[in-house]
Length: 143
Image: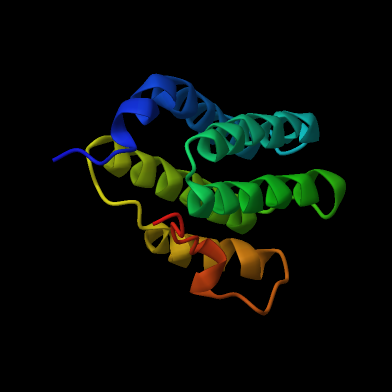
């Protein structure tokens, strides 16, 4: 049985997939040309589009996760040099979000706790020491 989120998600999923693929492609390009810092500048904008789509769909946990990726990329652009390890963490996070969204489109339950291992890596990479599963937990209280 498909989840209630599946039909609306199917309307925006191609754009989400395209944006996430573009972020991964950009990471790969930067690893080949690490002197071209401007390559990474477009990643936060692409992720912001994904964040907006997740917000519209009411996927608050996934949206919070995506915002964390946005901030991480913005920090790289404004701060210290991007290392292969940092970019590996970001790439892993993009893959985790893609797999989560693919699962939702196939009817999986909206359980953003699945994103927590990647979220913890992102948070630690950004210097946050207080990270909890509840950062991704947004229960539906409308019932």
